[in-house]
Length: 121
Image (cartoon, rainbow, N blue to C red; front, side, top):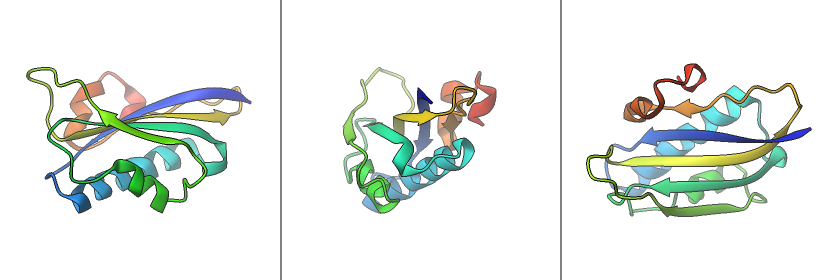
């Protein structure tokens, strides 16, 4: 087994709790599905939100998916002028077999952030 890190992002339609939770749920489910992940293999997960999102913590959605024993952290993304608004990003650390190939996930408008990654789409 080896420690891996996954990146992912999703756009949020509005600064509303349910919109943030839905976008996070979609992102986490897709990361887990594409990479065959179970909560027991996860080491930690960091979420960032752009400064225009503050209605809810993305970690709430992760807990609802069963990540109760996974350390989760929510923080603010650096507010770079001209950057894409209403985005949740994640950095997920997990254990997988040595030959595993991480499949990063970028959804919605956030796809433009890493269009160079074939596995991100």
